[in-house]
Length: 393
Image (cartoon, rainbow, N blue to C red; front, top):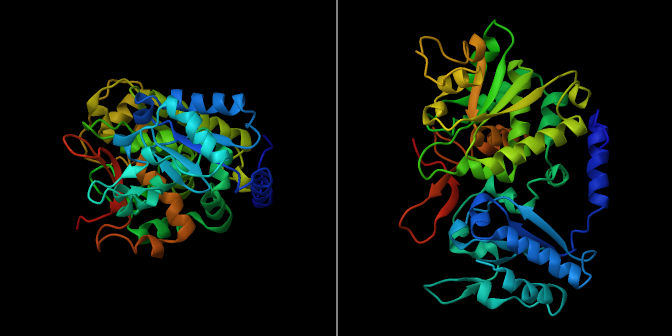
């Protein structure tokens, strides 16, 4: 990988990636998130690759292992691009028939489409399925569009444009004001305004300062953060780097559950890819800003989802909560100013910087802006993830 040292280098890289891609070329996207993997998604994508090789079609049809699109009850989920045909509960035995239609008559495999039980109608496109139709997916929408292990796929979708805008076109104060204006509230449960938290750390006199991704998602049945970290790890890294730039931190951490091995694998790979392109490390994009990220695997203690216990564990000690006489954004990790937000909060930051706070605030309520991802589990028809506008006051 060639180092990206300027906005011009980044644009040249995007153009190079685009030049090697044909948007009209068929691409088979298979969800290989943890949920679909449990249903046999790896065997499905292996079957697609074997069938394409058997027919000598590797040069005509692409395959892509993606993150979770949310419809976990009906996995493995397969989407055929560019038509965006959505097949559900695909098995390896279904693969030859799907491939024959992709390269042949372009017909759909009716039995693998979603069936609306109220009307009996088979729905071809993901956006037509009732489960998706009433959502507003700002974050999850990218999961099925990119290979979760490919930085080039993220760049092709405009990834790291927010980082470029922040580092080369905005002062830290301007970034902070935009986050405050967006009224982004923490998605981990407490709902504390992210901008106020960042401002407290930025104004704190002590050095060094730190930023942390809290991926210690311990609530029973919750897997929102896992799906984002598995499916689109670069979006979280981009938000984290911007946060570091804003508060004056040069080191960040991703604290992730040991029980999330795929999330650990994908975010570790994403960090290495970003380093190889120079999007992490020294003098990022020629801005003079240095930033590094480390992954820390939690040992499974539920209490480490609490901010001060998490920081104690990062320090190499038993993860126990501390008395909160002083906020951790002033005295946190190693008693230094620290901003800790959960995965979903960090993933919203590039959206805010790219689109502007005004657009972000068009969604949600007066006091809670943007969307929120929820996991649906238990005795319901369609388990999985949904992303909807914030509705709490």
